[in-house]
Amino acid sequence: MSDPFDIEEIFPDEEPPAVRLPRRQSGPAPQGLAVTLMADYTLRSRAWMPSAAIVALLAEAGVSEAGARAAISRLARRGVLEGDRRGRHSAYRLARAAAGQVSAGGRWIVSAAAGGEPWDEWWTLVAFSLPQQERGRRRALRGRLRWLGCAPLYDGLWISPHALGQEALAELAQAAPGALTVFRARHVELGAATHRPPLQAWDVPGIAAQYETFIARWRPLLPRMRAGRVDGPAAVRARTEVMDTYRRFAVLDPRLPVRLLPRRWPRATALEVFTAVYDGLAAVAEAHVRAVAARHAEGPVPDVRAHTVADIRAGVLEDAGPARVH
Image (cartoon, rainbow, N blue to C red; front, top):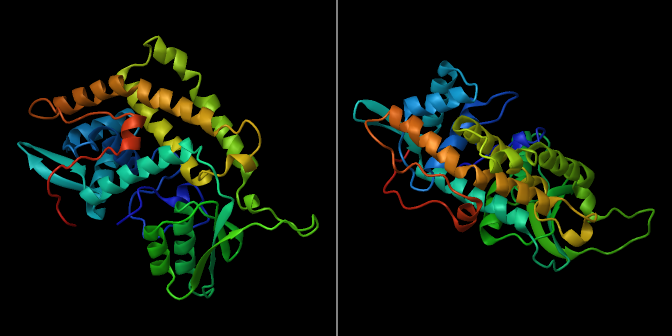
């Protein structure tokens, strides 16, 4: 089963483990946009979307027809999308495995931002040793550790301020059998000359700067939204972009303990802005996607539904019947 997003989008120097979903490139990324569109408007029931509608929506985001059709074809070959004939038209929907990962990933994104739970002051430490010639395995393990909210304090010692669940531990054991040790410990203060706080495993100033950039980019849109001056195509583009940007914070700032962070840490403000944009444009964007889908189908497409941040937190995916195995 693939991760919903590519860790190289966030940490370009680290290779993701067995990621088969699309990688974002500089400029428009047709595959990434297609997955985001399908997730934002069809995930709730894994609804079928006419391929011509996907192409049309991607065109509004600046993707050529050839690029859009190539992206759909590649996603289908990877097993991210599954295709079928719906009357005279071809249609696609998210494959069950991909939909499940997107739904679980969405819950992680919004829950990581919410935070707020008390911290027990215990750290999880992951120590590993893999030969340099096994570069692929090393990069894959580092990618998996990033997805689990860990960061490198030293080369072979990664840490997290939270305990890892049994599923996560099983993934790590499979990634580096016999070469990895996980334990929990509290930090012991040493002299200033030799002291390196665990929090230095994360680029705290850099994370704060990315939060502030996000807030400055999206907060000015809110008055236009309240005045009803964002049309359907613009609403779809904005929701896609705001989700694509915001989801990265779950890995950059994996619920780092607030007591260790600078005052006025912008995590909560960023979540408020994201929620306001994503939820506030949901109705307008949904209506536009439905209209585009209906133009390319043999009638209305009622299962096209936008979801809110509260829906994501609760788990968007519904039972949509058996899926094909690819």
